[in-house]
Length: 294
Image (cartoon, rainbow, N blue to C red; front, side, top):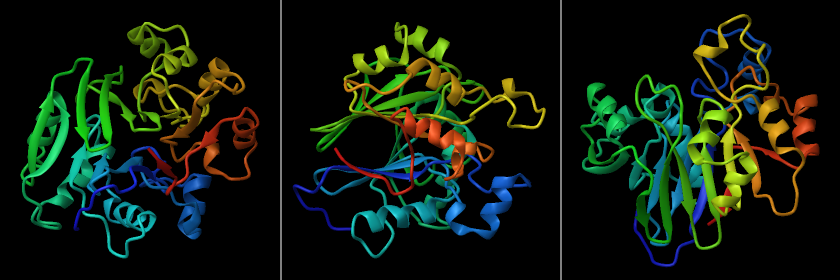
C-alpha cells in the first residue's frame, strides 16, 4: 500500500472477545449456540489496528481470525482490499493473542522482515513456536518506560500482573495528538494491578495516566459462568468488581469501554439486564469496528 503524509491518525477495534472468540470451540452454551445461527452474534478475539500520520498500519495482537479482522480494518479506512500491516505488536504470549502470527509466514502472506514488537519473554515463546521467521524482531525488557514511536503515535508499555505462565504481560498506553488510550485486555485482578501502579483505585490510576479512553478487561461478569470449572485457573477481574470500584461515570472520567468478553459473558447479549447496568452507569461495551481519531 502506498503511503502518504498527513493521514488521519486513528485506532480501530478489530475484536472484542476473549481469546477463543464467540462461538468457542466445543461449547454448547446459549451464546455459542446462538452465534452459530446468527452471524451478527459472532465476536472476534481482541485486536487493535492503528494508522499513523504517514499512512502506515500497525496491528496490536494477532488472533486466529486475522483475515476477517484485516478486512474490518480495511473497510474502516475506506479500502476495498484487506490491510497488510506494516508492524505487529503483542502484549503477551497467551494463544489467542499470538496464534495469527503464523499467517504472516510463507504458507499464507509470505511476509519478510515485518517489524514485530514484544517483550523478551514474549519473543522467546514466539520463537519456540516457530512463528518468528517472517519478522524483524524488536524486543524490550519487562520494565516501565518502554516506548515505541510511530509518526503521530507513541506506544508506552506498562507491565501488569497476569498469569505469567507463558510470558510477562503488558498493557499499552496509546498516545496521539488528541487522545490517551489505555489498552488493558488482560490482567489478574485489580488489587495486584493497583498495587503495582501505586494507586488505590482504577479511577486514580486512569487519572494519573491522563486518559481520554480506557479499553479494559471484562472477561467475566460473575464467578458462576464456567459451570463449576475452577475460575482461579483463568484469573481476570469480574465486571461486577470493576463496576463496584468505579461506580457511575463522572465528568472527569475517561470513556471506559469493556472488551475481552468471554463467550459466556451476558454482556454479549444486546438485550441483557447486565448490559443495561453498564450503560446506565455511563460506561460502554466494545463493538467491532469502533473507530477513534487519535
